[in-house]
Length: 331
Image 1: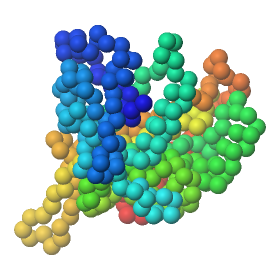
Image 2 (image 1 turned 45 degrees about the vertical axis):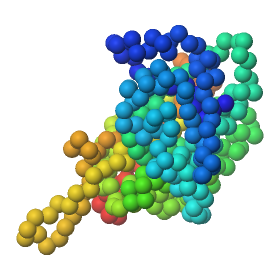
Image 3 (image 1 turned 120 degrees about the vertical axis):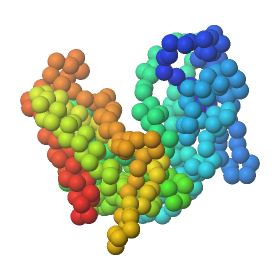
């Protein structure tokens, strides 16, 4: 049960390079995975000894931070994990919270796994695959998180979490975050427990941290992020019955940026800005994710009919937009 289970490459017209790999079942590929422990650092790396498929992956994923020779993680990109009190816990070559969740999920899968039984899975898009150093903010949206079919016990737990976090006061709370720190060449990571303990002011500071690369505040990101959030807000306002309970919003941007000094002779003040490699606009993406508890009129799982838009989600989006706009102007 390695940390890496299976890789799916986008379909291309030239399939000859995949001929060898396609002859083997996914279970056989799974069995070819092996864990390699680094004796010096104690880090867990993953190697894939199936050379034809390894070469295919390397050809199609050139420049990706998570793929090197034999699918080893970059050792120079470490993670700095902070707890809710801001204490630094550990420095690793991976996001420790992501690894914890992944191992937990694999453990649940292995307890139900039967090699002789056919299992069906959803193949999800890796929305950060095009980023070399992805900076990711996972936001739980809305003022309510429990689904219509939640048990009374779970309902009470979810209500309590909302009341004791920024879900109630802002309609949004942080579930996870990783930010590439250009000065230290490492990621700063926070988990959902960190997000639950934040006050409204703490939430604003965390957003500032998300937009800071360790050298400067990335104010150039504010406009493209706000633009996409406003587009989403206008769409949500038009929905008549959707309720996106317990869904999240991902905000992603490229952490590898080139800092330049904009100064010429005669200027009395230097200003710094960031320019993405090969592009005049920062690479930013906003995605709605996690729709397991989403409900709408006409859904076969719908138990309660709602009318009008999801005001809790709208409340969260409006506050999020306002906070990012204030950060961009230094408030």
